Length: 328
Ligand code: NAD
Image 1 (cartoon, rainbow, N blue to C red):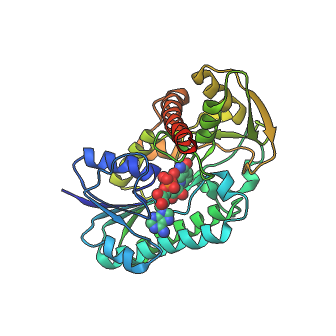
Image 2 (tube, protein in one colour):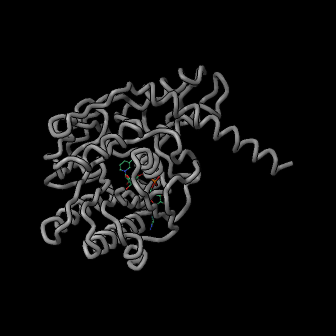
Image 3 (cartoon, helix red, strand yellow):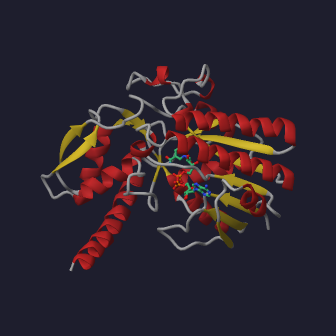
């Protein structure tokens, strides 16, 4: 039985990955600042610890063959793109990666997976919402639009430097907007699909909801199970990356809102308001992953959105009952 570590195992993608690894029969240690808020932990060992502390990083890699590094100071546009959290995002995530790599290489870890992001791609190629360019080789000359993207790019380079110099294998993926149930859906760190599901859920038929930007920004969204499938394929392959893991189905934010309101069976009016929106257009370019891993997403966006909407509606209903109870 392989012994693996999932760093960030209390988070959204980490939680789904642990379930998948357990179904495969692997022995899993999870480390995170917190327990998973949304589902029972299924890891064999759950460490609550701060990976900015080198001693914690050293202790959790003991006896581990493969590491999946998903821990990051993470959020949606409202957390990452306002500029207010730049120092924390860069410091915290860089410290986690420095510690995990150093500890992993010293402890003889065989392979490390690193979750980078589409935010590494240069702004100049993402100004036209209808024609963004995000092929893996377009990343240089570097010009990410956020410090989050710069940290991811630095850390990608760090992983490859450790591979060249320190005898560990690495696998690097650039995730493009992963969504699904059991992810952050409220509190300021949620990403667009979850925020839209929550707003539509809270709205009555015919109500107005606020959406940042002008609705014409484009993105693609990948369902979390498909992401996890890809991560596992990449980890088992001989290809190091970096490689995009995303969907090539690009939609405008307005189309996303329409799809969610249709799933909810509600008519909603959209009020566009100023807010942090990131680049104008972004889409995954899946040519490399098709070639190297023979992978392409299998389900349409709507299928994953239906599951996500209903999960958020359930979470929202429970939270609303909580509010009613405490105010009585
Ligand atoms: P998430 O926030 O749900 O999970 C990250 C986890 O890291 C959290 O549970 C958090 O508590 C933990 N963490 C943060 N600081 C830590 C520390 N100092 N020590 C230990 N744990 C710490 O985010 P996610 O959506 O599951 O993302 C997982 C990874 O994928 C992140 O690295 C993120 O940057 C990357 N990514 C995600 C997306 C996406 O759309 N979700 C897109 C691009 C990249």
